[in-house]
Length: 539
Image (cartoon, rainbow, N blue to C red; front, side, top):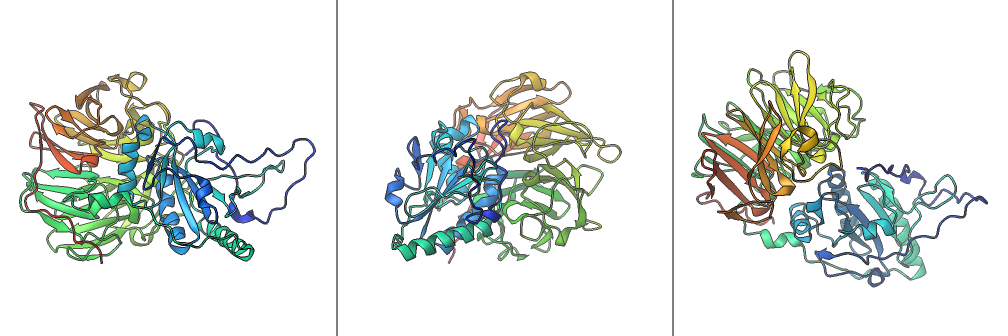
C-alpha cells in the first residue's frame, strides 16, 4: 500500500548482492541512514531495543501498519524465517500507522496478539523511524548485517543503494540473502548464535472463551447465532440467547476438513447461511469453507490453502477446489440466488462462487487499490471487508477508503457506486450526508435491517446508522472512546454486525465479546454464552 502519493520502490530481490555498483559522476549516492530505532513511543513483546544490543545477529526490520492486508500477507513469511534462523535472525516490527487509531500503543498491542506476532514491535507513531529509513510503502523490509550495517538490497539507476524493499512476497530471495549474511559472518567470527526469546503478547488471552471475534451472523428463521471466534480458529453456534453452544473446529490453526471435532480454520472471518450449509471466509487459509450443519462436517469448496499469485487485474474464472484466492474477509448471498459473493480483501475485489457448478470468478474490481465507481471491470475497491444486502443490491464495507460501496443490477447490468467514501487518506469521524461530508475510519462490517444500514465504524469504536437512499450517516452507538461498557456504551474496534428480531448483534472484537443491541431502545447487553470454554492448549 503506497504512503499517500509516493511510489513504491520498484526493485526485486533477484539482483540482491549480485548487482555491481553503477558509477556516476553526476550525483554521489547518499550516505546510508543511521541504523537506529530511536523515536518509538512504545514497545510490544519487548522493552525498548537498541540496535547496538543486537550486534552479531542479522536483523530484519518489518515496516507495517495493522490495517494493511499486504502487511498481513508477509507475516507467515516472517514466521518461517524466524523458525529457520532462530539463533541467527531477529525480526523487529516497526509499526508506522496509517490511521489515527493505529498510532495507539494499546491498539497495536491487541493486534500483535490477534495476529500472533511473536517478535518485538515498536510503535513508530510519529513516523520517525519510517522517515529515517526513507520508507515509502507498507509493507517494507530492511536488513541489517551482524556488524550493524545496512544491507544494500539493490541499486537505483544512478547507482544509489536501495536499503528498503516494498511489497509482499519475495520469501525465497530474503531467505537466500539472510543465509549468505549468516555464512559470511560465521566465517569472520562476528556471528552471535546465542538464542534470544521475547514474551509473546498473545499469551495473556489464553483464558478467553471467545477471542478476537471478527464477525457474527444472526439467523431469525432458525433461531441460531454463529460467532466467528477468530482468535480461537473456530466457529461457535448458539441460539439467539447464547444457549447450548456447539463448537466447529478443534481450536488449532490449520486447513483441515472433516467433522466438527477435528476440522481446523485459520483466523476465519465472515459467514453466510444457505439452508443447512454455513459458508465461511477462512481468511488466513485463503479459502471458502462449507460447514454442513446436518452432517456436522467441514469441507473446503474454494481455495488451495495458498495465496493466489496470479495477476489480479486479469479476468478470472475457475473451479473452486483448485483455484487459489487471496484473503477472503466476508461472504453473503442475495435473496433469490444461491450465488455466494466474496469480499476478497487481498486483491481489492468482489468474487462470486456458484455452488451448483463449483466455479469461482472475479465479479467486480480491477485489482487496483482505491475508490472508483463504474463498471465491474473498471471499478476500484480498497480491501473490502464486510458485506450486506438490502434484498436486491450488494453493500460493501470498503475498509481502506473508509467507505460504503454499493453494486446494483447484480444479475442484469452490474454497476459499482458509493454511499460514502472519498479516498485512501480521507478518513475521520464525522456524521453528515454523502461522500463529501461523511468520514469513517476503517469500517469493517455492515448489517441491513428495516430500511437502515448499520456500519461498524471500527477504528472510531462506534456503530453508525445510514439511510442508503439519502446517504445520511449518524452515530448510533459509542462515543469514540475505546472501552468495554454496556451503559454508557463503549466498544473497542467492532468488526462485525448482524441483525435479527429487532436486535443488532455486534462482534466487539478487541473486547472478546458479542454485544446485543435493542434497535428500538438502543439498550445494550453483553451476550453470555453458557458453558463455553476456550479450546484446549495445542500439544
